[in-house]
Length: 295
Length: 302
Image 1: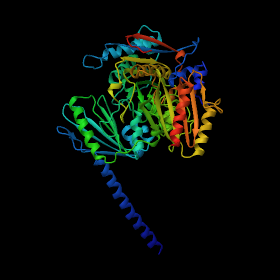
Image 2: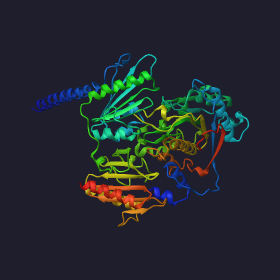
Image 3: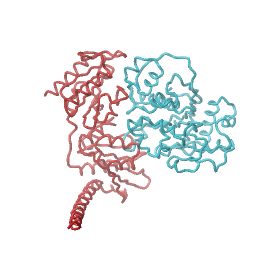
């Protein structure tokens, strides 16, 4: 693959250029194209948190249901989920337990509830982050649901849906070189290949900037009150990344690219063909609260 | 005779191992002693943890790479608690050199002042500073007035325990002062940080290695900022090789010129001076870019 530079992205109006411009934070204008688009649903609700800043579980469920219905063009939530999961599926819900910003119990339970509504027995469902390689359900899973929050990350640019599968690698550190550029290779492993039925990027209080050894400061989170849902993890990550970059621009009052850029999202598209990161190939359906939507 | 020889070697190795062990224990004790007693009303955890080299992953998986991309040696971690208050997490990183401690600090410098150590900043419950070869982070979140007071008290106590003030990397002195945005100065020696302010390439086209000293800084230029990059290589040969690769990959038209206009209308300039590469990006004026390059060249000669 040719080495791509800033100038290549500026010269070209191709899909790679559009995706690169987004991920590497290069300002540019690209011609709109008529192409088949992958769908990503963004749902926001201003009442997601109660007055004590606690998540309202019923609103989380409502948001997930709306997203899944819109994603599948279904009016009924169960009909939508039946297109995703079958009653005889063995389902692994890959969550994220980072203690500063976890997927949240409410999201996990909302997913599990609908999986069970479809008819999957509870004994055939597992919710896990670390230890998936040792987990009986994950080892025998026929379906995976990938759910995590988006946050900036010291080395990979952002903690993304693509990166959430690093626990499926026997040697996670093997994926560290070059800012985790080749994370998408994990998605080709037999334990996950072609099993992911749904990707949920939690954008309740995303982290748009990090500092210190724990890379967390609540100063750099904000109540976005959203979730992004789609079948294509790269498209969902790419959309979440646009929101993070827009927030950085708003907060720092200047273009502030991620440090380092989220190269793994770009390569997941251009090199590993896991999905599309090109905003022009993504149809975003926006539902609910529209204030400060940033996209 | 042979068995005597083996026994003799075994004894020598045992004695050496013992002394190495004693020295290492003393060194560990040294960094542990940097953790101060608890302020009044707070309790310090008995368990003071030490992390060395790649063992840091066990503590801060995901963030360890930043420290490892500098010259991380070891870190000590301790937690302070008080009823009704957030825990205060103290991490002291021995970065081997003051340049590296400065580098880690410069990664997330945003509102720095000199309240603690050589430079410090306090944002939303998180205090960090560098002094000598140490980078110190103290976090209490969500922040309260009481936790802030205790955080500052712990910071002062740690600062006092670091005798050597340390100096910023020498390469910083090559930055011209006019229009320099000081908080933007970022020191590094791993290629991954090259694109920190401005994406140049997805590959390491400037051939930056651990032995390369790099500094990035922003300069005010009207309503926009231009970016200055200075790289110091181990020797002239490496600098020439890196410069050729950079020009071939990024600025093939450069040829005998110093400055060219790229596709977005901004000017990019690059020059080689001894074992240094100097480059200016995102300049709206050709003259400004060339002047900045010339200023750095002069400072190198001085």
